[in-house]
Amino acid sequence: MNAEFILGELLSVASPEKARFLQGFFKTGKGQYAEGDVLLGIVVPLIRDIVKKSPELPFSEIQILLDSAYHEARLAGLLLLMKQFKKAKPEKQKEIFDFYLQNARKANNWDLVDVTCRDVIGAYLLDKEDRSILYRLAESDNLWEQRIAIVSTWTFIKNRQFDDTLAIAEKLLNHKHDLMHKAVGWMLREVGKKDRQTLVDFLEKYHKQMPRTALRYAIEHFSPEERAYFMKK
Image (cartoon, one colour):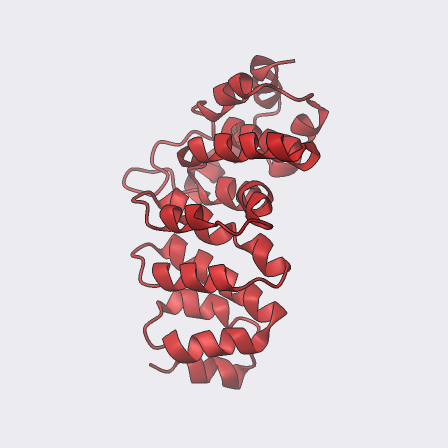
C-alpha cells in the first residue's frame, strides 16, 4: 500500500456536491485565506477510516500526500503522521516531529492544523524544557505556522501547564487575522476550564486591548455578568 492507493481510496468516496459546499466553508475563493485549495468533499471520519486501515508508510510516501493539491490528501498525510507518532519510540517520534515541522505550511487550513498539531507537536514537546520552536512559529510570517504555535499548547493545557499558552497568546494578541483571534480565544478558554483564576488574571490585564472575537471565545463559559464586565472597553 502506498500514497497512490490512499489517493485512489479518497477519490472513490469523493462527493462533488459536498465539495462545492466545502470550497465555500473553507474559504478557498480568490483573496480568501485558503485561495486555490481543492476539496474532494470527504468528511473527516471517512478519511480517518482510510488512514486507520493503512499500514505505516515511509516519509517519502506521506510526502506525496502532503504535496497533493487535494485538501483531504494533505489531511490524510498528517493523520498518518499522528498515527505513527502514537506508536513510535522516542527517537522515531523526534523524526516525525521534525518531518511535520518541515511540512508545516502544507497544513494550510485551520482544520489541518487543529486536528493534528496537538497530537504531534504538542505531544512531542510536552515533556521537553526547550519549547522555543513554538515561539519561532509564532513569529513566522505564515498564518498556519502561527496557528500551530498556539493550538499545539492545547496538549500542555490538558496537563495543567499554562505558561506557554499565555505567553504565545500575548505574542499573538493583536494579530491581524480573525482565524488567529479565534485560536487564541479558544486556547485561553481551555486554560479557563482547567484554572479559572489563571484566565481571569490574564483577562484583567489584557481584555481592553484584545480583539473582540478572541475575548468572546475566551469568556464563552463565563456568566452573563462576567461576560458583560470583560466586554466593556
